[in-house]
Structures are given as structure tokens and as C-alpha cells.
Length: 171
Image (cartoon, rainbow, N blue to C red; front, side):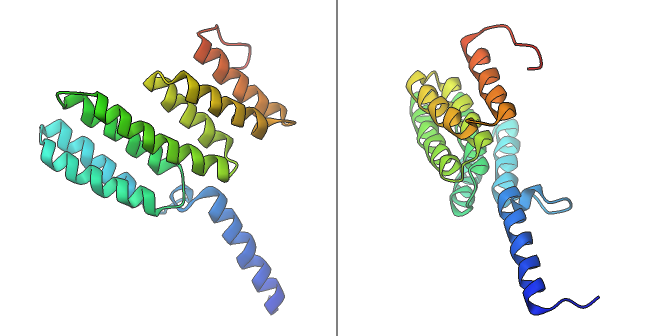
């Protein structure tokens, strides 16, 4: 069956929208994004005890995550930066750097209206003990979830986990 130009254009638009929403790393059979490969290299270098190689790989991961349009790579890169801090003499600079990376991820997730991204950023802020940024993230998450019972339940589950409350039914 032959498609006319308008049908082809519509098909390309729909496919672009799907890939843009899902991201190329989520498409079956697609190679992992370059930031993910570099994050794996960070962890491999840390396992070997090669701090210099870990830092080089982290820089590559950070650059690749910044160049991508998504928020997920930045969260992973921020986590990798915190892992670098675990082997350093002082964790504070690494936690401060990770906070900045998480803020960029949060901003992207908010701009893309990604509830998952905003909640994952909130988890990262919680791991840093940054209550103010967790609360800010939750305000955004609540706004994104408004009117969607499943999304509202996801936000509620996060709030209960964060507050240390027992999970509600279905969490």
C-alpha cells in the first residue's frame, strides 16, 4: 500500500513524537546512550581502583549527558559523581557537584513535564539530605500529577517513602 506525502509526513511526525517521548535508549535493540557507556566505565575503573581513569570516564559521561536532551543521563552521571566522592578524601565537593547536576536534571524533567524524572530527581535530593529541594520537587510532581489518579498515587507513594511511613496498599 502506497502512502501519500501527507500520510508519510504524519507517520514521521508520530514516530518522532514517540521517540522523543521515549528516548532512543528505550527503543528495543537500540544501543545504550554514550553517557551510559561512560558511566559503566566509571564504575569499572572504580572497581579496579583506577581513580584517574574513573574521573576521565566521568568527564566523558557528563559531557554526553549534557549534550543529550534527556534528564535520565544527568541523574546517572550525578550518581556516578557521588560514587567518585566515596573514594575521595572529601565527599562534600562531590556532593555539591552532584547537587548541581541533579538540579539540571530536575529542570529538564520539569520542562519536559516528566513526572518520573521529577520524582527521580527528588530521590537524588533526598539521598543528599536536601529537604528543601525534595519539597520543591514534590510541589512540581504534584502539579504534574494533578487529575491523574495513577500519577497522584505515585507521588503519594514517594511522599510516604520519604517520610518513612509504611507503604499504602498498592505501593
